[in-house]
Amino acid sequence: MDGTVLVADDDRTIRTVLTQALTRAGCKVHATSSMVTLMRWVEEGKGDLVISDVVMPDGNGLEALPKIAEERPGLPVIVISAQNTIMTAIQAAEKDAYDYLPKPFDLPDLMKRAARALEVKRRATPKRANEEQTKDDLPLVGRTPAMQALYRLVARVMNTELAVLITGESGTGKSLIARAIHDFSDRRTLPFVVASASDLATMDGPATLISRAKNGSILFDEVGDLDDDAQARIVRMLDSFTDNAPRVMATSQADLGNKMESGAFRQDLFYRLSGVTLNVPSLRERVDDIPLLAEHFLARSERDGLPARRFTEQALDLIRAYSWPGNVRQLENTIRRLLVTSAEEEITRAETEQVLGNQPAMEPLQGGSDGDKLSSSVAKHLRRYFDLHGGVLPPPGLYARILREVELPLIEIALDATGGNQAKCADLLGINRNTLRKKITDLDIQVTRRRKLM
Image (cartoon, rainbow, N blue to C red; front, side, top):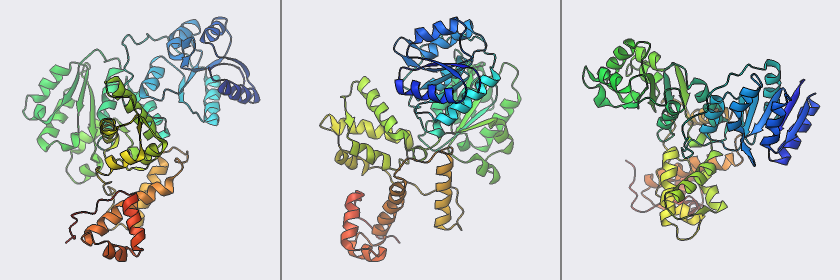
């Protein structure tokens, strides 16, 4: 690498690490903890690349981007931030940042991006600052590789004309992603219309939708649930679009590819809707984000007037270990319940266990054929889990989490099969009865009024 890099971060450790790494790579480095100093260097014509934090003691790195672009058109800026939300990624893209990385960042990855920025020196054009006050309370929060990759893709497709298909399990935030794409796009001042089945029940329904949406956005929520007639009307509507047509988005928790192959979903509609496909990962696929989301919901509930609370480390460990079949929505509802039922300022593991004991168990893995062996289905799930971490190892404790996900339903089903008779259940499982009792207690399994499976 060759060039001068301006580093702005109020964390001395980060300044030191970046200065040493960039210097070893052949760059000259000017580092500061002050946004004022950074802007003075920019105005003086120093630097071929800026690496800046967002929140600084005397300024904001994102808010400084338009001024940097005005003073030095083409000067690339890499934004690094501990504010790991979708808004940060979108604002960075909206204000023409060269790149965006969440903290904690991977140093080799940052160095590669810095090398590309110095080589390309992309000509950045000034862009108006967002005139609206952005919300900071959307639960689209996450620092895991899967979520950061999703944020970057959202930022890239935000102002394109492509249709967007958003997939993922129930409760992952698919509709929130669609709303964010609209609210931060150039169409933000135009209508955002969510189309229901009743809107497509009549022949003139699509025309009414277009009239309501103008050239804003239309979202077909859970499009896979629509019947054949509704699907056909959407196809005809999309074929009638002119240059000033609304942006089209759709969500689905069903695998539309599989539904299309089975004849339950129109092929022509599938290809019209899937210009870009965004997959929203489940909480099981981004375990490291669970404590972050939990703290976010605690803070939001406090702003809503509920009492201030915090989790003990043991309670957070239990929350991380749970499978969350209802994803972010289930997590939020669980935390709101804990805020109401907890007597003290700290939410304990025991209180959390009591609430989670009433939650639904994890559903079976989807997508496997009836002839698949259990080991094959588990292997597919695990490979996907590793792949979604983008080459980074999953968080520690994987063995215990996987064992719990298998052990809990195994014991519950065995208890059902033996009518709740623990002696028979222990014999069926091939374990000691005392061991079974301990597992029932540890896993908070309810053993009353169980019926033998027929």
